[in-house]
Image (tube, rainbow, N blue to C red; front, top):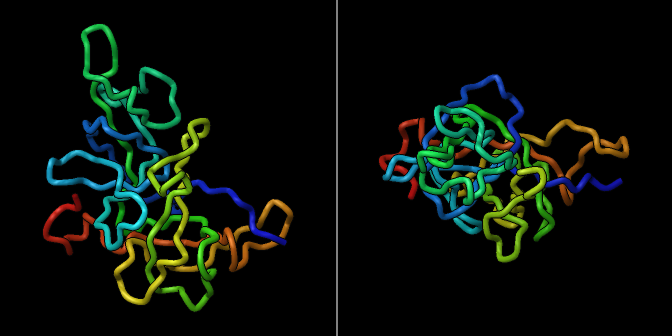
Length: 208
């Protein structure tokens, strides 16, 4: 039977590793759960580049959000909406925003494969690939009801070496909703890890 079609971004699977809050001041774009993030030269966390950007230097993946003093957000949004990022005022909690990031270089993530190009095979384990957003034009987007990112692993970008932003570790051992095992092919679930991590000290500058 077919694999379940359930894009949810990059879902952490060994979640006992490090997580940390990072300050967020950029108000231009939303950040969704399970979306990769990076820290540019300005020093605050931002969502990573859109589809087509290869070899990104990444900090980790967004797994939660907080407001002033790392309390809950003023509005109960499941993602960090730009409307939550208005300048602070004395009468409202709409100022400081923080992103909780799964930022351990050894963190592993489950991600769904897309349906473009030739499907990945077990022989692709150890290779690297990039991600692609399912929204129109490949722009950063997600589900505004669940807050989950819509990105998937872009099978058409897989290649030997370290050019891709995500290294493929293995096929995920998970069961589909119909009782069949996850298998290679469309919508396969793979375990990946960041290829170029900002906390490893291997990169001289932060990713813009």
